[in-house]
Amino acid sequence: FRRVLFRSDVSQLPVAEIEPAIAYYAEKLGFTLVSQNETSATLQRDAATIGLSVNGRDPEQASCYFNVSDVEALHQELTAKGMEPTPLRIDEYGDKRYRVCFAKEPFGVCFCFGSPL
Image 1 (cartoon, rainbow, N blue to C red):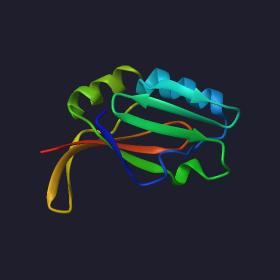
Image 2: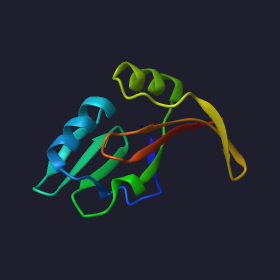
Image 3: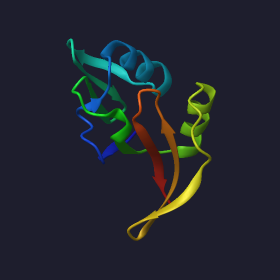
């Protein structure tokens, strides 16, 4: 992962319970735990840092975009780990085109992973 672009506050992505969310993000998305307390955690993968938080917000309303170096390889990785990303497609945002896929974690947060074309 090269960077994360904000849609939701990625330093406080909402989760109902911190421990199961940390385990999922580590196992399925390849994040490493950086720090944790009773209600929040910071995780990192490559250059992307995110935070998980039991903060009362609805995870179903949270989303973010990760700019990745190889979206096809990531799609294969997520599929192999049972995450079931959407099929790859080309989207336009502003005046740029991106190859993207989407995946939703079981806690509700929706992710878009993409590479500029």
